[in-house]
Length: 98
Image (cartoon, rainbow, N blue to C red; front, side, top):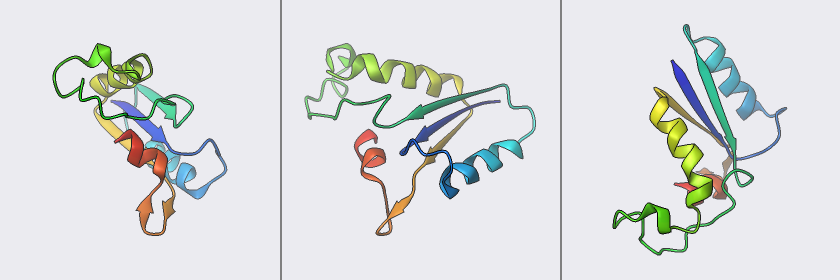
């Protein structure tokens, strides 16, 4: 099984990160884990150009950043969004990514 982790923070000593790593350690047959940290791996913020909705993903300003993430998603059977909770919501990095 391939797994993709989208992390909102760089910190590796957080309970959110440790919970995700523990969860993965309990899964049998893990082949590859792709890990991305926002905003380092996706610094482009959507500008609402709608290129993705019209089938012109390559014209998006963030296409070169999003391409490796999309490729990891296509290879993965499990996607984990690893984000601390801020005021009962996911962090801004995760919201912008989605």
